Image 1 (cartoon, rainbow, N blue to C red):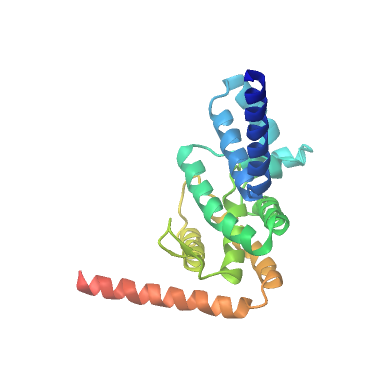
Image 2 (tube, rainbow, N blue to C red):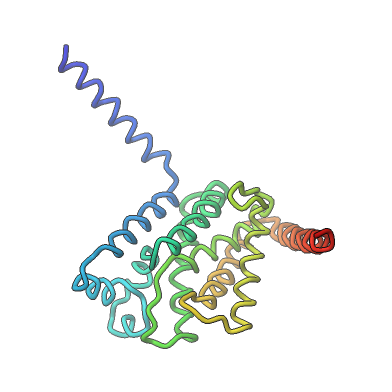
Length: 233
């Protein structure tokens, strides 16, 4: 009887794992891989860090040396906890919205093509020895698609519609580039990622013009509310 109970428990556990894997959205698997890869990256030894830097981080130099896989591997690595947490929050919100609307295959195609193309086009703006890691640009691709596919989807994390979040963060990056903001943030790559997603959003949404109009309407309302709040305060 003990053996039977153990076997039943094992079978139940196996079914639960299978259903979890089957029902888990693909973008959440990407999030999990980003977390695991980044944590591993933070705690490796100095010798191992050199190997990871040379073979998994994207740069013009690495690409010229034939490491053509680095535009993919670099997407999963993040510099620190803040970098990882911020990116994964955006990826969770926009990635799940998009996968629900257009399916896992298109969502993953958008994520990887947006990330890879952003890395490659960034070479025109950054020195070849500049290392680049993170899923930020790929996520910006997803945000522009959501803006054209489902702009009114409300985010409980950002407390506003996702179309508004997308356009606000795009504008923030444009302003940062315009004023020459310094630091380790690749603002230009983010803008490239956003632009890459626009033709995808147009292709995957029959109402992209309406949704774009809605997004700019939300932006106008946001601006009006900001002005009114400033006058009240």
